[in-house]
Image: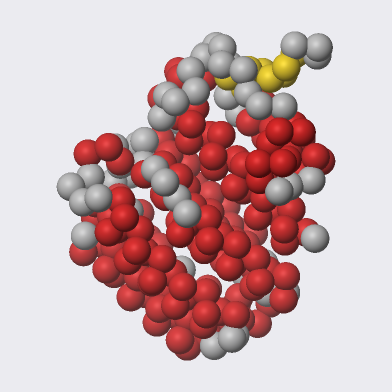
Length: 226
């Protein structure tokens, strides 16, 4: 149940956040009701409520008793605003990931619960179904964050969350300007990440480490794909 709740929450979060970030839902737009969202995503009402509270906390939506939930007036400014700290290039972030992410495979294989590993398939499905560049990139990073969290190393989790924050700050690398159709890039990413998930679910640390390393190297060689 926890795995499904987390997966549903991530799917709802990605869908609503990308719609706001990409301007498909403008300031003042009324969001669907909790009941409607629960039906659309096959999620529990409390999962929907928890996810909406996350978006409220980010300042992207506003909830008004008796009126409903709306895209916040300053949502566009918030998504464009850069958090404090230096700007990192994608190359720098990928190099950093190559330094630690493959080695996490051993910790994940040793420490992850069965629910953690089973939940990776749900993130992979979200990646497979991503319809926009923002959804695609949110799904990729969400899956790898789930892998890092499964290592049970809080310091590395914070590091990876910082990497995600940096990518969001850059607008996911201006996805609208990508030279390839999303379908072509998505297919390759799903294939590579499916190999990672399969190795981790088998608790094959060696195969998982190599799959993660190869995926990051390929991404670094074609920087526009991440």
